[in-house]
Length: 216
Image 1 (spheres, helix red, strand yellow):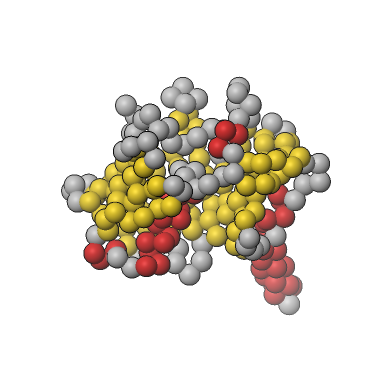
Image 2: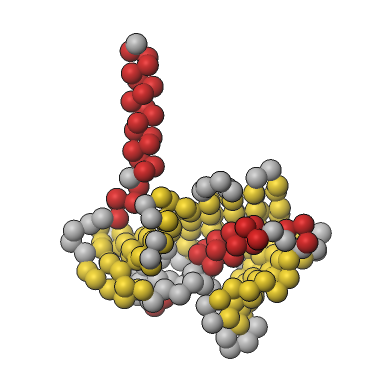
C-alpha cells in the first residue's frame, strides 16, 4: 500500500510539472511590450551564412548532414539540408514571413512532416514574425519574454547581454496550455553566434534536432 502511494504521488507530480510548466511565465511584476527581433540577439545575420552539422530524429528515422541558412536576395532566405553523402533532402524558402517548399526529397514529401520541419526551423532560427504584444520580466539576471497569438504562445528566456538584449538560452512554444516544443541554445560570446541548438518537438510525431555550428 505504501509503495502504491509513493508511485501515485510520483505520477501526480510528473503530471503537474508537465501540465503546469507554462505557469512559470506568469509573473506579476512585468512590463507590457511589443516584442521585436531587436530585443533578442538574432540567430541569423543576413550578411552571413549559417552552417550547422545536424542530426534529425523522427520516429525511427535518423538523418545526419549539414544545414545551411543563407540570404539569397534582399527578402529571401533559404534553409537547405544536405546529407553527409551530398544528397539534398529539402530546401525551404522564406519570403515575407512565409516558408515555402522549394525542394523536398520524395520519401519526405508528407504534409505533416513538411509542416513540422518548417515550423521547428522557423522557431529555431527566429524566422517567424516577432512583432507581437507581450510581456517582459527580469529575475536574477535572466530576462523573459512571453507572447501569444490566438492559441499559440512563445516564451523566450536568457541572460541580458552588454547591449541589453536577450542572449537566448531557451525557447518554449505552447498550443493553448500544452507545450509543443522546447529549444535550447548555447551562445558563444567570442564568435557572437549560437554555437549549439537543440530542439525537441512533443506530440504524436516526435522530432529531435541537434545543430552544432561549423566554425569559420
